[in-house]
Image (cartoon, rainbow, N blue to C red; front, top):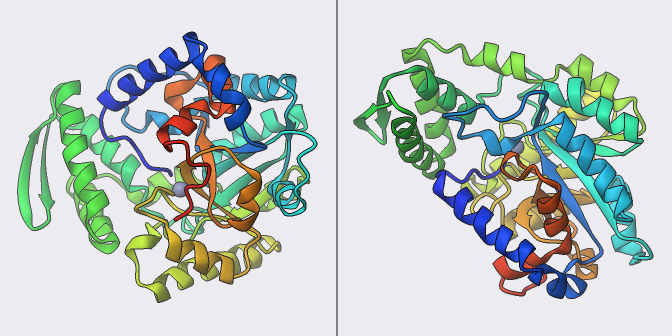
Length: 357
Ligand SMILES: [Zn+2]
């Protein structure tokens, strides 16, 4: 799971800015300098059905199989190679940029990656990586952002203990649900990781949501992951054990989360992961300390959710690679075209190619 924009306003503003950049043609002026040598795409859920109307704060984490299918066609037609993370690593190390490239990565280990995304990638002969947080296939992950959405969606009013205070929310309307989501989500992202999980576990108990059943229903099992891993198109990467924001943990706990997840995956599927992605992946969840630790632990690459293209200089920052989210809010080929120009990220990163500290 990547960083969520907790409001509905932000995506609307973002879309209008992106559309201006696209329809003015301005992106074409920036493209030559800013498209870089390639890109890594981030995905989470892949589903058959499209946008559900109403309250769906996690919608940005879903794309449809049709959109994925169209995107694979689009990037190939635009002349990009679709490559594995091993190949991204090789091209950066050897500075082999004779052709531009993209890599596709899916975070967390959702069952729909196996059922729905895998057949699409297979049909295109396109390599992809699944980063697995091992508590997901173990059936023990608390998918707190999905649990919170489920509870708010189902309840007309809500009582929550946040930071030792009782708060009441009117969640009868979609607007009320979004307002409650914004407040609770923000508080949960701020608090220590163990307190966050305790708070959501208590809330789930209060509103009779079975968090383990939810995890099992949403996650690939180890058996399925073993089957997926036999496909030469597939790379299994590590994504910690418990999906904590690593920057909020003491150093020893970061090392434990990273190395333990690699060991568990190696034991369970017989392949030692060489690629890693940081849970949430934003600046507050992974930064310099994490980049150095993951490098020292011997991973070939590690990816964030900082938004940028790949440039030759990333060869010196292989455990701080940026990605571009293929997300539910932007399921149109013109956004993909715009993202591949690098123009939106040149602007958002204030014309800095590297955002690695
Ligand atoms: Zn994740």
